[in-house]
Length: 467
Ligand code: GCO
Image 1 (cartoon, rainbow, N blue to C red):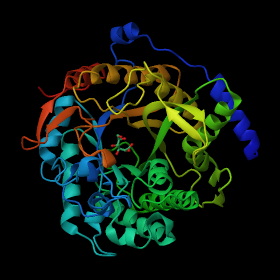
Image 2: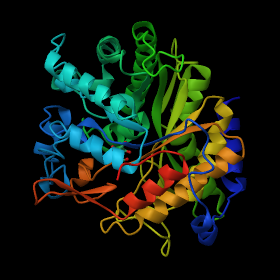
Image 3: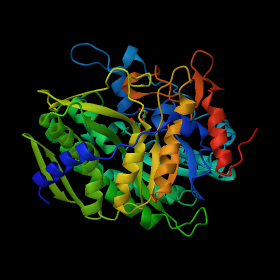
């Protein structure tokens, strides 16, 4: 199919996609969790830089610096600093997971800690991650390890980060090393988190490191990330040969892809066209590259990158979906040709994102066509009082159950996040945690109302939360 046909098809799809509507009363009357398949992973997710504390990487440097006009990079000049101190409080965090009744935990290992200088490995840090995986297993919690969640060691950033093909080589070596060090405890691997988000913020909008605004650099970085994923998957398969959980597979490899529902703001053809283009670039480039092994990145007027990536096709055993929200799209004259917004009157989270559980169902249905199991690797909301999370959780799990009932192979759901943590450019103002972290009171963890909801879902699924 040529690009024009794809665009027209997407435009038509954007207009015609059947939009389900979820009834609150039905959702509240549904014993959510009972409709999930056996062996379903019910978990929470975090990322190293957001929770560990004390990291020295490209993000720590970004937090300390400013835009050319003097504005700080992070809201209120916040630094990640000690984060939630999970580097030292991991055992405490595992107890929180046990109280939720989870049977899986997605976390990332911090490359900058593990390989602070090229080829120099921090064996103490490696040992700590190995202990974490053991601790999780002992608690009946499957570790799902992300190898790259946005941060880079300083030396990798200094060599040009994802624009430099040498970073692909370095990430491949790092992946091989992780497979050897952690493979005896870990089967579930997530090579990369949200390559599309990373390149849009880091290379197009310039609001994340490396702070560029260059569509060509964005496309190069994205192509390198996909190559890095393919080579990482090959290393993991070659070097992790231990089946840690006894299910007959030594590795089970995927990546986490961020998706957003884009909907035309009006019936105007220009809004539909821009919606289709946005959807094609942001949501579809990655799944289509995984399906075909061919990376095709087109930004009208500035980029057309076409590349075959060896090993990309069939590189994933599962696809992770990070789903949060929906945007309405209006065509305009900005660099991305569009203005994205949430119409007044919609329920939103505290960052102003539309709360639209139907979108999760739509994406699960859509990606069922990829032919690999799907995992909701992230889903959550910034809820500073904690009052909206119980229904958010119920309604999004209801979306998962509906998709499952219609035959979509969904193998897991991970709530973002276990606890409030460092939300990148937004600092510590947003609260995504099932557990609230009191930053002024020694990083104490406290239950939010959704803890009880989560426990109920876990029980419905046949799991046993600790008291
Ligand atoms: C992302 C990340 C997480 C975020 C979460 C909430 O989507 O940016 O994977 O690191 O914290 O999504 O925004």
